[in-house]
Length: 112
Length: 116
View 1 (cartoon, rainbow over the protein chains, first blue to last red):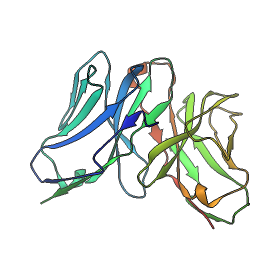
View 2 (cartoon, each protein chain N blue to C red):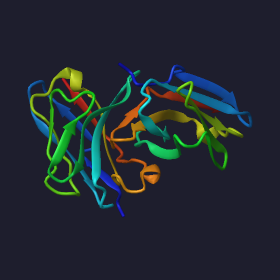
View 3 (cartoon, chains in turn cyan, green):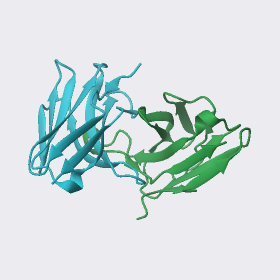
View 4 (cartoon, chains in turn orange, blue):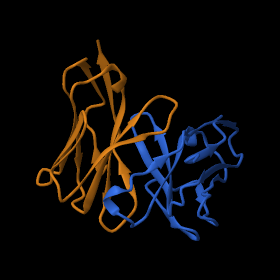
């Protein structure tokens, strides 16, 4: 049973516009959420995170929003750049564990 | 700092062969884990460890063994390789229970394994 879901396998956005990547989770015990970016032939790299006590966290062009009642988080990239083209994974961790559970990923393509 | 180092980068095995994927980190991280990445399946947790001498199963542990004799190393063993274990394997580490909301996982660059 997939506890972390990314229902859009791919997303295509024009350079300069906003990219919105979505993630849903089912486990109400999750209290820490992260986004990772992955380029081909490399390991995932940490992008941004949010704890369950917040509903928004911003870092430069990247903002993560958390809606606990809907069990939904989203990553906004503004403005999108061609270098943002990668696979993005959301991940979640429960308050009593170090295990990080990942979603299936969304491939973002930013075109000129 | 080298971060998380995985060896080998590529490996081809025949069905039934055994091998060990190596993982080492130099960040003094307590927590280490192994994931496999398959198309359409994302990253799935195989095994993890919260410290030397402690290991536990993740989402897809069957066919794999791990041990954690030191803080730095966390090898993954395939006892009898099967074609279903063809995948890209990632090792990752982080601090454990320290500053809980500021300890993301750090990943190695992966081992691409093909079982024929």
